[in-house]
Image (tube, rainbow, N blue to C red; front, side, top):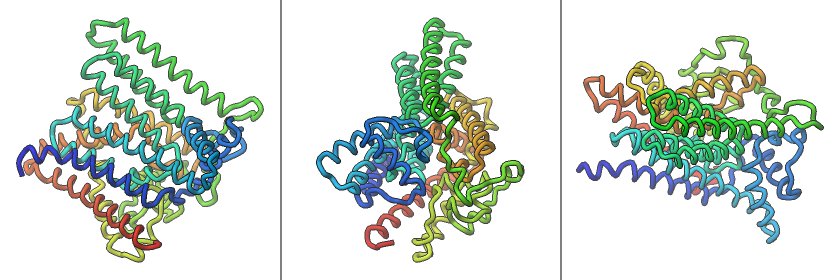
Length: 434
């Protein structure tokens, strides 16, 4: 294979990833595999019917930031005026998530061109975002998560652009994306901290325009204050009288025990490998140990696949292979910390994000102890940063070992395994009623 053809692999993965999302959404439309799907739909319908926001204490999802629901509610109202059936409207609304997921994939592709020139690293990052089941399933959700990931990926991409050329428009675009992410879901506010930390870093290095950086710091701070302030007003209304959080922690069987430190340190990998899925209402050894469920929900989300894997046992074997090879992702993140002396802003920014995000997750777990609050989706604002952090770690490790094709081969095997798994699942679901 010539070098020119090899360089086309990342672009090919991008195209296949986009086509997979289009086929997935067109073939299945809206899938009711989310346990909180009805609550998301009620929020959309309330806005469509009333052209107003609901009180936060009247529904499970109502404390959520409203941007996604406003967009979906307006579309719902428009289609409803033409007497489109309710089920058809929700199938149409899925395309918001589908195009958000495609947009995230495109941001991922262009980011890889900036963080590395190595084709296998580019392919690994794009492939994980394209074919990891948990990411792909977001393309078929009635949920604000896919739109959040899109805006967050945009913020991270434009911030990386700014590190390269110092063009003010890029940092402004990053702030706009961060603001839209925060209006979509409150965890998007993490992006403001990342941008501020980077701007303070630039301010304290040799730069020619300290006044510009001070202005950008003030703009970022005020934007973050506005977004977070509006959220606090939204979730702490005078007529409610108390802060409202999404009450997933109240669901029966979802209680966790964060006071037992083993909850944070037990990684029941063997059990997870044996079960082959990370169902939120499934095996307690997986769902109720933080590292296990975090890793499991990164790969396969919080859903059950037993109806398919019991009928087709080879699918479970393929899932187990993905679970094994998927360890490359956390390995890359861990290894990268041993190369901290070689870090660039591309490594520091997502690292700050990981720390801030982790603090938020641990706080939520202590305040609202629930399996749902330990889901990998809580890292949505920095998905793209985590992928770049992992790939940089694997790339640096690959430079250190003698047989340099081992890690690239394993990475590409993981991506291929995920693509095969997704293709089989789509074929089975199209051709059967499973």
